[in-house]
Length: 300
Image (cartoon, rainbow, N blue to C red):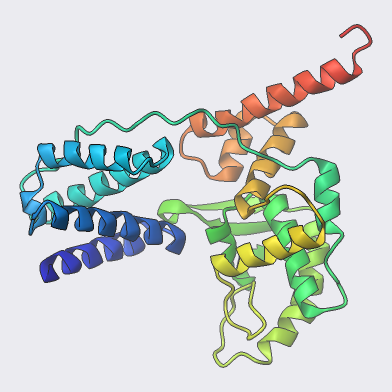
């Protein structure tokens, strides 16, 4: 299995360097491929070249027996399809056995978002007299003000923030860059954090860098770190719902559309390649408008 490990490592490096995938995405790719390698051992297959269309059908059955959700099955098959496409490109295998594997259709789930009352509750719990509170407030304000992905937030550098015009340069998927404006609340929170909290944390740093968001040791804050911070803030705010960084992205898009922003502008701000991805939020908006109508129209 030594050759297989080398092939997997080369694929992960390809995703990291050429596709600019986030550590979170890389972790799932590697896990999904490792799961398939364990299945190959059960089938006594010793190389990826030995995997056939029949093997793929057997794997589908295996995943069904494990009672995985359709979304998980779709992710695993998609990961393996990409992996074997890479192996074909590198002339490691002759064909991609996953190329005709149909992905199970996901149940349509509307993006979950926060209402303004819930947001205000979340924004009110940070202790702005402490460095960590100043940083956490700045993270919250930036995620909601820009709708950026958590990986994009972690990659931000001081030089990416332009206070003069009120924009931040975001490096998205596939190394695509976009400028996103931010408002006065985010600006105020950023200034406070940069001038006080961040400066305090950097005193403990062993290496110089210009990453915007740092941990208590002055090192670059990771995606896991931001998720942990957010879960603690939600707990402190006594919110009964689970809030993820991506939920703030959903909230950003939904609130913009609710206030009349056009779909193309929201697509550009979110960094979506296809308009159909952004259109998901219009369903949320319609649902919201229907509730407003039923609750407030005198003859509803």
